[in-house]
Amino acid sequence: MVAIQTIDLTRSVGSPLRRPDKSDIIRAVPLAAGALGITSVLANRLFSGIEPALLAASSQSRADVVAIFLSAVLCLTGLQWLSLKPKAPKMVELEGELVNYFREEMPPAAVQDLEAAWSAVSWATKAKFMVVFKDEKCVMHVGCMLPGHIAGTAVPGPICLEAQRKGTGNFLANLALFPGRAEFYTYLPRNSQSVIVQPCGERGVVVIGSGTQRAFTVLDQAWISAWNDKLEVALENSA
Image (tube, rainbow, N blue to C red):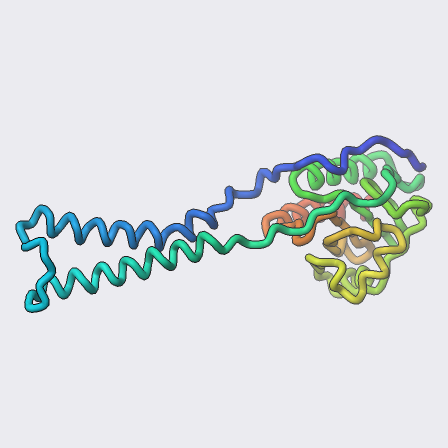
């Protein structure tokens, strides 16, 4: 059963699991601390009745000089941190065909579980495609696929089989740098940027990917893993 439908692969999806990025606030902490230190020293000299001029013989003056120097160092550190912006992950529009494939032998209940898993994962993360294998056969391929690929003919490669055998997942954050990427290019868009491979019981494995490098955070991976447990039950019940 193969159906081609319109799926918006370029939509911006917000994850309910993601927290706001606070990196800018953290980088501004030294600047704020330095400014507060300088202000405190000046306010102390202004309102405490101490001689405004700095006297070398005065221990208070020497302490103020040290405090101002350290505060200035903090300010410069804060400005430097703020000028350092992390490079945004590379994001591309996948060059592929839209697909919504489920193997004909799959029971309706199992298909519903697979559809629910894809809806949840694609809504909560930057996932653009999802492929499910059972007994080394493709039982589901939704989202995007390699142009000209015949839906349902994909087979798991060494990376997928190794994950299934060991029972441990694998996150390829930058697929272009990974030597084993060729196995995914037989059925996925050639410009796919990142892929997650998750074992699904002893008989299945799931491949989820995106057009963005480092697309999946730790929380995204936990979200995918939680749905993967449901997929395992669905695949086992599909016999």
